[in-house]
Length: 174
Image 1 (cartoon, one colour):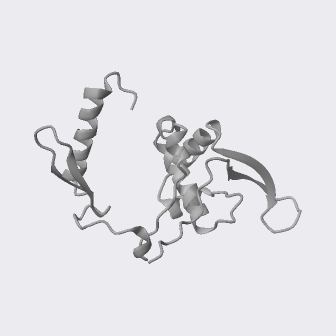
Image 2 (cartoon, one colour; image 1 turned 180 degrees about the vertical axis):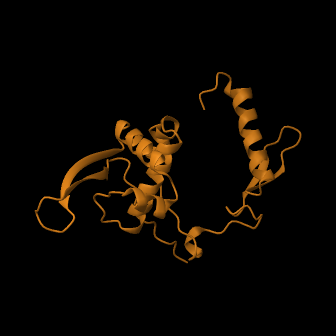
Image 3 (cartoon, helix red, strand yellow; image 1 turned 45 degrees about the horizontal axis):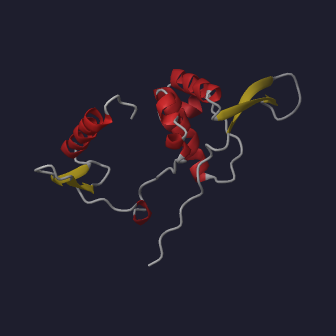
């Protein structure tokens, strides 16, 4: 975590975070007295306090796989809120269509699909372009389908390696 004293300050921060997640119903933290580490049990991500179920068993929940490079290459520490939000939005599209090579968002479409504003879309996209996570290619399109005079510029976005999401995981065999 980059703390100057990981033996005490880092351990205290981790313990405080675990207790906060326990209070919110995401973890069950038991034991941990007399210098012994606590037993931690993962609970349902809804915060209901129910036991955690593996995502492949729940057909009603949509999960997005995130590449480990988000953490291993330090991107999680570099991105601000808008960059992370737009990255997760882009990954959700890759999650639904593994053959996707490029994506573009209209102002209204981005808001309707993801509930985020135009400033978040613009700032997040710029942040991801600057970080080398996305590349952009501008194309001209004619709104009538032809090559007449009414062309619009469209910014096509591509996720760069190694930030492309991993393929969907196979369900474990019984």
